[in-house]
Image 1 (cartoon, helix red, strand yellow):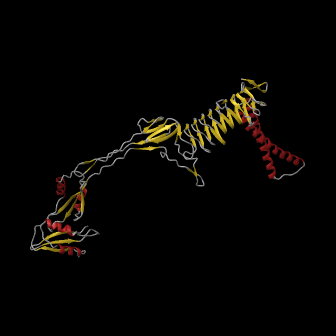
Image 2 (cartoon, rainbow, N blue to C red; image 1 turned 90 degrees about the horizontal axis):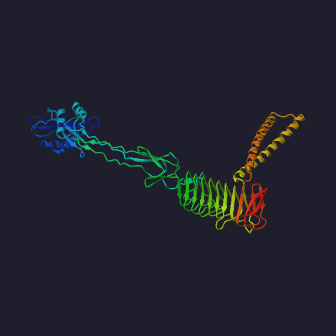
Image 3 (tube, rainbow, N blue to C red; image 1 turned 30 degrees about the vertical axis):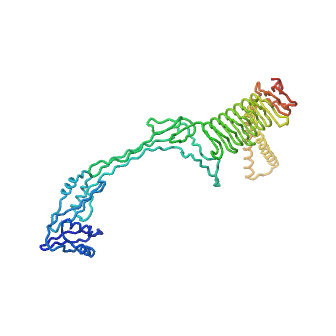
Length: 529
């Protein structure tokens, strides 16, 4: 309980009784006491009151104020209200000794007369009048703070940071080939979710006036093509496989990825749709696409792999390590020191020292139109303006068989040779073992186990060898020369060039012009166009 004071009225004097605080309560505030006395026109000596309060111990003390009797004082209180009208406090002062006490209803009526209509703390008022505590602030009315709402916001389901962040290698160095700059998405992927705004709730001050919460902000999902929005307009979903970007708060999905160059600014690209490169592809980088790849500049010693077409406007110098793989066609201004494989056709103005295979035909009959060095293969036809060179560069052209089947046949043949070699070694050991057994040589349990393992290995390898051989023979039958396969030269074919049609071949002995090479009666023949 706080320390407090109360007036004592005697016949010939007026005194004030000082009651010390208990249980850690606050001491008497002299200024508060003098203010109380001044409002009641009771004389006092402030210095005396200060000294009395300072010397007050645990016992009550009475101080004479003036030598006359004054009127008795009822219990009273000081009323304060906050500037925002959100709280009101009263601070009760004790009545004079034998003075009259207030009632709870008096206080309630007074609050009403002051216009306090909301938040009256009746429980606090009742608690005071049940156990009076003077010179203590009592909360008698409290307003209701407004509940602030929450702004709407968008939760993006992809990385919206457009700055490239290289992948770190195990040794801590930066891998600029893997920058993770493309945000892939698949059909049906959720791209963004709108979390709606939550409106606030009104509050009320003790005067009964409503307090408006702050306005909440609403947002909408903004998006471009290839995106579907839910009926309630809160979810964006991709309609295609492609890549997703956030540009000026708009979500965009495209199945064509457009970049300026493929180099350390982009890293390798592995994309679900098509890729358009407005500039160049630098050495050692990779571009893989489920759709097409179009390069408007040049390609150096890089890997380009597309399920669709590969188009290179200004050509490719592969530097001996550049590779093109297309599920469709390959079209390039020129191909130099390149390995190129297309399921469809290959078209170029020139092919120099490259290994090129096409599922249908190879057309090199443009303004320059030459094939010099390397090996060029096609299933149906090779059309070229100049074949080989006067310098005698090793040049081979091949038509009539599917290059992919030929590659599989070669692979199977290598496996057959390996299995035959391994099987031969096992059989030699088994033959030697049988000879020793015939001579009565005894074998340890470990040696017997080893022999059994060899027998099982021989059986397994024989089965695998038969499987490889069967598949090899089947593909060999498919490699029969395609009817009508030919090599057409619309300029000059130079000596030393090798022409292969099916399983027949010839070496050009002297320069030939405006000619066609065909297969007739098992041989390669030269005819006119």
